Amino acid sequence: MDQRLRNYLDKHIEELLYLLSIDSTYDEGTRSRENPCGKGVAKALGYMQGLAFKDGFFVTEFDGHAIAIFRPEDVFKEHRIDVVSHLDVVEPGEGWTTDPFHPQVRNGALYGRGSEDMKTPAFLTYLAFKLLAKEGVKSPRQMRIVLGTDEERTMNDMIYYVKKEGLPDFAFTPDGSFPMAIGEKGSLMWRLTGAYNGTLGKVDAGVQCNVISPKAYAKLASGNEIQAEGKAGHASDPSQGESATLKLLEQLRNQDVLMGQLFRVFADPYGTALGVDLPHDIGHSLTLNLGILKIQDGKVYAEVDCRYPDGIDSRNLTERLQRLLPDLQVSLDYDSRPTMNDPDDPYIRTLLDTYREKTGREDAPYVSGGVSYSKIFGHCVAFGPTPDQKVSVAHQADEHIRLEDMYTAFEVYYEAMKKLMEMA
Image 1 (tube, one colour):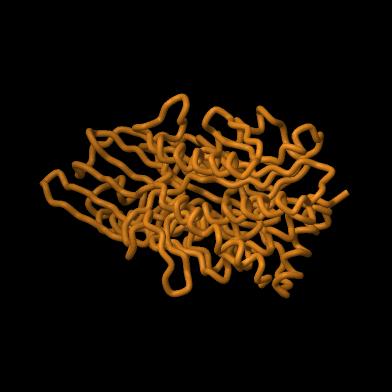
Image 2: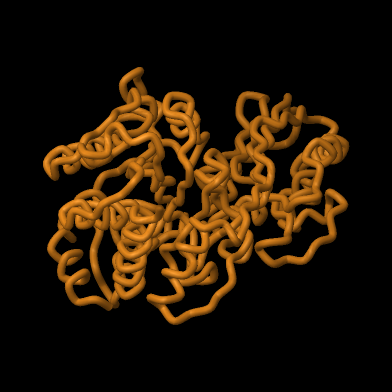
């Protein structure tokens, strides 16, 4: 790696560590008009806004949803490129061997919630932009660092931003793996609701819809309690985790009709219960994750994450799920269709060529099972920061990024952003 860039990143590492120390999970209890995702997320956004002001950038603030950072000399340029990241993180969950909001370096890696997804890559692109601005790189268009607050839940932050600012000529988000996610599978969320008249007094399972459940609890009407533990992981890749909710359902399936129904539907995370028979690789599979399941006071509430490839009809899937769960109301509350970009697009070629030049690797772009801001921007790809999908630990306990991967990503971002700025 370029030693100059390594030294520059090392010089600013304390700023990154402070950003990682902020608990920026969504907090319903501290939401307000000024802080639509709660005080922790607002603190992270405010910290980056303060850095940008100190470093001499212009900052536009979008009512607590997002900020855009750009150079004063680029204010009136008509065309723009956005580098888009989010500062919100998923709940830490259990199973950590370190404090998730006390970042630390050990065994050649930086540990902490958000170290991969995605405060570190957000900071790396900001730092690259800061250095390029310091070096006076000329550009015919405006480049922006855009930081959002609600990617892990609704993406309403970027919907709000785009409504205000319109779409850029091109965008990339450092929210995936190298070489790039040139497209993304469809993503939907089902909400399951209904009355409950079974044998259980209470169920509390899962932490977030798009996280494989690390913990599950049930209390029988008799007063007995059952707990199950799993391994958290990103919902888009069932191989990453182990669902505690499914373990709980398996124990209860012969004691309760609804538990048996739910187990039969969700036991196979690749959707065979819905009549789907597809390869199990990330780019082509359909995945199901019963992320949240709650039963209390005679009511059922659940959230299901589903990722699906092109060619699958989400409405038809919804009808099938409703038939399998006749005692619950199934509502399709979120549905984002699959996306795909042109590999010969000049912006995309610039990113891919830079990655290959800097790493010597010839990996092909892939279709991601994840959901990033690419869904909102369309002409956008997920670009890094990890060297491939198999090493991602996003949404897991002990989330981390290898230091060498971090340094490599910084160099790739610096060179790629410089080339994008200089494109005619």
